[in-house]
Image (cartoon, rainbow, N blue to C red; front, side, top):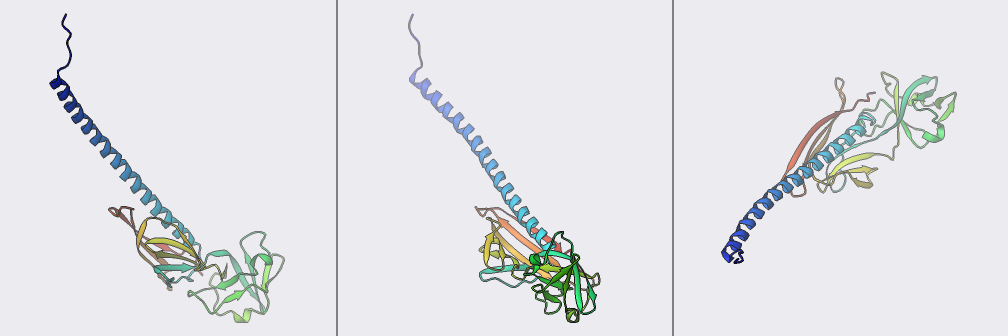
Length: 240
């Protein structure tokens, strides 16, 4: 019996057809891989944007009311600055003394003697109603600022006070197309690694409205071919 096999032409045609099939399959695989990669990158950018907005919103809502500013930090294009509330409570005037309590349990004079107490703040750096707590005393869970009642200029309608760290100012700034969190305007800590442009503005409180922080950020992926914009207004919930 005469042996049979593939001719050269049959082998060449097989290689050509196989190559076409492999290239077609590779194209579909590459398209799917690129689609998956774009989806992951888009999700990463969206997740990062939501993280930045949520982090900023939470800190803004728990900041001393009205003590916000848009003062720029060197190298930044936009900034929003504020003081986080360490603790808060209610106060009362007793003769010449200013007495107050705090909402946190177990707080002693040693815990707050490096902080300041503010009542009815109306501006970023209030000149009135700010009381350093370096000489505070306490008795029966009531803190006392002796002889400070005469320095109280304008009461809070709800007798509310706020205690904050005067050296703990926090700023969120756009620096080199990233969002940075600054503590006391010294320590830079980027909270995003995507390219970010936009604006951060504060509208001061009025008699009818609370203060509002306006956030407008545009996040761009590493390739620069896709971006997403987020606009959010954060109301400062704590009021005098």
